[in-house]
Length: 374
Image 1 (cartoon, rainbow, N blue to C red):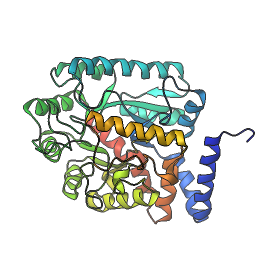
Image 2: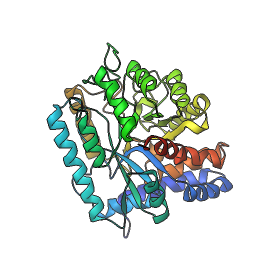
Image 3: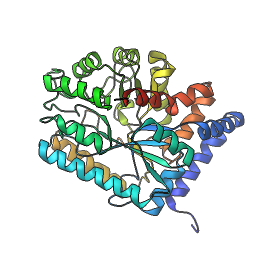
């Protein structure tokens, strides 16, 4: 194909098919809504599963052309890692992302404050926001939180799937909740301005954090246990408690929406609309848990995905329902502008443009504004 990559062909074909299936007024309105909205992916990545090392010009362009205003990036490590090693890895990973921003100042912007997100929207850049999905880098020394905050850390999960010194993750059968160190970590995050993310926390750990946090908290990337009873999905009671705290619950595009099968746009919409029903439209957001650039379902992709799942099982951090066939993207939303496509679908189902803008980013922007005030 002359002048178009295979990835671009796959993406444009999917978008065109969806566009033709929607009523024209909804499609037209969605484009305007998306241009106007502050769009925040509450957990995602640059590139796709093939990406390794510095970003190519194509991946940078896809990131900026996505229309996403701000992207919450996970800084490694995730899972059981010795604290000193975890801290050094995190600092190195942050440094690598800082280098990407320095290398592409016309495309990327650092996000340290809510004002930075608004400025990224105005300038047409993609704001990059750093977060942890595990507290192992500071679990033995909470003063490291201050150092990491100075480096740009703004969102932290106390635990991943397993137990650490701060508390139990969602796969720990004991469900013991936060430790004393975990409670102190929540207090310190409140003090210096870091959003407490409970996405992978155990039920009791999440309940304890909701109790002890003086600021709103979030489940940045999750699904609804009422629709698929899985430890990574949150119960209606947890969703209501998060909303009652002023926080947000974000939908992911993961197989946990669909009992281990590759999710579809219908799965995403089903869980998202349940979240709206339970939490209210002011407390729902998006955290795709996937890369901005689309995946191409080649034999190489399938092999790479199978190896990734095996590695997670060997490391003891794999969740139930992680299968070699449960690919980590939703077919109809496998495009850099997947959140615009999701906005299209929501508008076509009768959701108002004001509600869609809240879900796309303004709800999460409000929570970040409130929690980042030291």
